[in-house]
Image 1 (cartoon, helix red, strand yellow):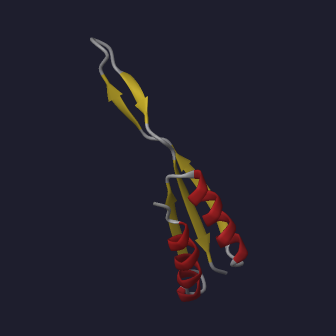
Image 2 (cartoon, helix red, strand yellow):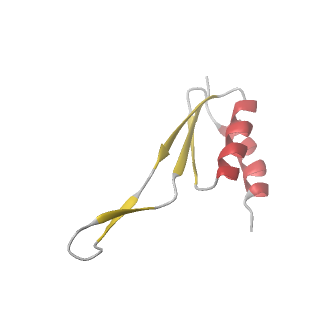
Length: 81
């Protein structure tokens, strides 16, 4: 299942409801949603930036611990002028 129709339909509607100075935040766990969200927000004449967050869990492989990485999450932030 893809969220592409949801993103393409939801983002423009959310942007039209956004007040001047308002912010919109989108969390993306796939590169496809990130690139699509970035492109759609840029087209809406918004100030857009992003942060990438990498989560890890400590796992004990015996007496030591190591960090087991999870997939990164992209956080898109957009602000209406």
